[in-house]
Image (cartoon, rainbow, N blue to C red; front, side, top):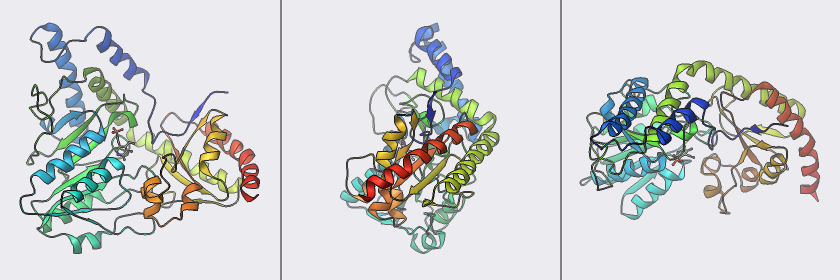
Length: 386
Ligand code: PLP
């Protein structure tokens, strides 16, 4: 039996084209872009091309794209950099349920004396924009929001948030974690007034360890790294050329047919939900209605079954999914920031499973997955009730 990989929110398999171009760079075009000779120039061309591909897809100038080691670095740099320009302003606005890349940076800024306010979300985890309108004032330094939540797939109204923020606080910077949305659903950084945006290649069939930070044309944040002055002095260190060109290729492929890929994943999500709720009782969705969330993420609670146990049972059948409780912590908000923001109990979080699709998943995989669940769930429920 071949594997069924439904954990694409965690990472994705690089495409053949991505592997091919990266292999070419690793084996043939391995020069350092800073070298003056032909091999260096060849390497530099890969970087220029990848940056252009990304900038064109987002309709932004190439000069706004800075390659980093991934979204964790991008978000840390963005948040700490915005805070470094705070002057006398002390307020930061955010919403609960952020990925730790942002959440831990916010904790650090709170320790440094910033006043971090977490604004309310509705019953589906969506930001309540009226609360933002009330909270934002010229003392705000930074507002940060995830576009698509990695656990529930809730899509935040980024198009509204940027405008609301800048109207009341023109100097505030608006940062978006677009890791789960970039290459999957449309993003318009200029129209949506995004100042800083973090992305990662490995969520869209690119390599791990590469991402970019978008910094809007009229914005500036200080660099965290000192060194050789690469990336216009913003991100010193020899460029990860294989990663950058792999990322560029992944973006090209993701944008080629973005709507088609989204429709395919949405179809699989709806099919899985229908089959699973028809075949098994006590299954509910965590987060938005099926048609409202990002096309690739489905978070289900299967009552009476610990998702971590189910995850390992499925793994024996080469089926890979994710549970919110993979981390060692016993605190619900650390196990699953987004689910605890929805008010789920620790038991409900323990029983929650994230299924996340990519464009290469198939209907057949969905049917096999549901059949396998139907085998395991009654058995695991019996164990739990003992
Ligand atoms: N933000 C979100 C929403 C994510 O899903 C992830 C990855 O899990 C990250 C940030 C961190 O990305 P990276 O692995 O590139 O550091």
